[in-house]
Length: 232
Length: 273
Ligand SMILES: Nc1ncnc2c1ncn2[C@@H]1O[C@H](COP(=O)(O)OP(=O)(O)O)[C@@H](O)[C@H]1O
Ligand SMILES: [Mg+2]
Image (cartoon, rainbow over all chains, first blue to last red; front, side, top):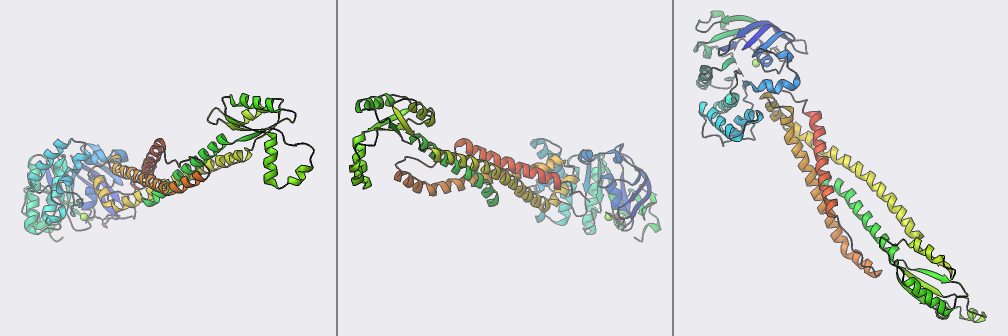
């Protein structure tokens, strides 16, 4: 589903954010991307969503080489990826319904199908009945669930999340992670960047640890973490 | 919006003024009486017959015969040259026909004058329409100037609306970024801004039409009073239906174009980071 081959990323200012990353994530897999701040987690996710392109190496998403996606085709490409952000990135002048509907409107669905899918997505995140509310009237955890509903509403093959629980207390964080697990159970490929080791130690999923732009560890699902994984 | 309205109202208003002056000068030319001086040896009967003959023409509305004796008497009474005239042995004035052309589309006054002067009984046709021709030329020039002003102000409207849309794009950069992140195409993101430009242009044109209507309403009664002084039934004309449609359509089109330019230039710069 996602495959990195010797990927380097150098920003225009000369900073080498990724230095030879290789890994692959199978369809239907769920993995955490960990590592200290500044390690390159966000950069890695930006290469998947085509916000950035690799300086060297190959990024394949759905067997598509992102370097070969023209500017004009980027929107289509992104429509097949769900993205969740730390700061939600909701549109605050629109209702919860309209926020979740946005990718569906962009996808050109009819109003009835949109309404059906928005309700289904809001139901899955436990916010059915709040569709007419303004996002600003919801709690941070609820806003993040709206963001997740938007990410999954168009039923993408893969969802990536960058520090989705960064602003939440441990209890709400676990709730959000459980939500991701449930989407993964129905077949959605999940890649979640987080530095909350406490949280992911309570779940058994693959962990890809990045340090200084390189893969420092790739721990398969079900295996215990190592001591040196801590200390971020 | 008001800036847009004024930029649109100016050329449209000037156009209305030019049209009105044009129709006034047209009616003047149509109604311009002119004098036909007959040869000195033309007698009373021949003069009356000629008057009837000319009156029967299609392009003539009326003919008044001014008898040479009567003309002399009038002149004597009005000019104060009575004594000098008494010294003359005979009446120096010829019979005169005052011809009122029929006007309208058919009647070229010049052609009529030419036809009349061909008659050997006619000594001189005094056509006093040169100033009308000059006014025509000035109007023609003014009309060209209005064309240029229209183009320039139209360009101004495109820039003003383009700038408004640019500010709107900056205000909504977060929204645009989010739309791009979830896969919104350039066309999708562009559309609401194009509609916005369209409505700005149409709204501005509508206000411009109202401004012109208000200005004409203010001018209508003084213009009618002035026309009455000159015995004319002239009425100020406003925008015709097709001119109003052109104004509204043009405004909307300019707004669309301004938004098109602004989005083409500024939407690309907003990319998710
Ligand atoms: N747009 C950018 N331009 C220049 N340097 C950047 C940019 N984005 C990130 N970096 C740098 O690249 C490194 C990796 O950043 P990032 O991918 O955000 O790490 P993480 O998400 O793991 O904290 C950091 O040193 C950061 O300062
Ligand atoms: Mg980061």
